[in-house]
Image (cartoon, rainbow, N blue to C red):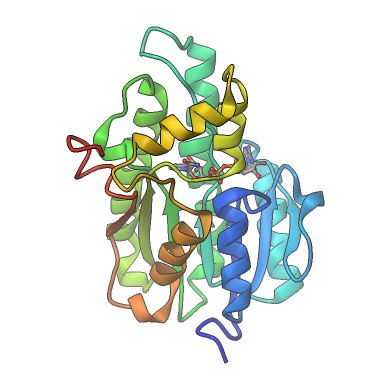
Length: 249
Ligand code: NAD
C-alpha cells in the first residue's frame, strides 16, 4: 500500500530529469501517472506518455482530457516542464523572453486552468510547481531564467491563496543544480566537459550536484497527504546553494 493508492497524477516535462524521477516515484508509491511532454514517445510503463506542448492551449486541454478519460479522475498536478536561458538582461531579445516565459510561466497557467475543474472533484487535490533557487537568489548570467522562476514562485503563492477554500493545495520546490540531461547538455558545450563538471561540483556548498531523485522526494512529499496542512510553501532542495552561497567549499 502506498500513500498514493487510487490517486491519479500528471507531471509535465515527465519524460526527462526531475519530471521523470518524480513520475517514477509517484508510481512507486501507488499513483497512476501520466507524463505530459513534447517527447512523450520515450516514456515507458508503468508511466503513461501523453503528447503535450505546454505552450499550446489546445494541446494542453487535449492532454489533460486524455488523462481524465483514461483514469477517470485527476488528483495531483506537477507543473515541471521548463527551459533555460543564459545571459544578462541585455543578451536575450524579445522573442527569447516570450519563448521562455511562455513555457516556464504561462505553461503553468495553461495546465492549471485545464486541470482545476477536475481537481475540484478530488478530496486530495494538490499542485506542485518546479521552481528554482534562481527565484529567490537571482543567479548571475541567468536574468531571464531567474525572472521566469520568480514569477513561478509568486504564482504558486497566489494560486495557493485563490484555491485554499476549494481544498486545493499549491506548493513549489526550489532545486539547486540538479544532475539531469539539462545540466549534461550545458556541460557538453564546454571544451573539457569532465573538468567543467568537477568545477561545477566544487562550486556547490556540498561539493556535489543534487540528484533528480532528491528533488522528486521533495515534490512527492508536498503532494502527499503527509503534507496535508502545507499550502503556499516552498521547499529548497539545493545542497545549501541559496543560504550558504557566500560560503562555497
Ligand atoms: P530536462 O531538460 O531534463 O527535462 C525537461 C522536460 O521538459 C523534457 O522532457 C522536455 O521535453 C520537457 N519540455 C520542455 N518544453 C516543453 C513544452 N513546451 N511542453 C511540454 N514539455 C516540455 O530538465 P530538468 O533539469 O529535469 O528540469 C525540469 C524542471 O526543473 C524545469 O522547470 C527547470 O527549470 C527546473 N530546474 C532544473 C534545475 C537543474 O539544475 N536541472 C535546477 C532548478 C530548477
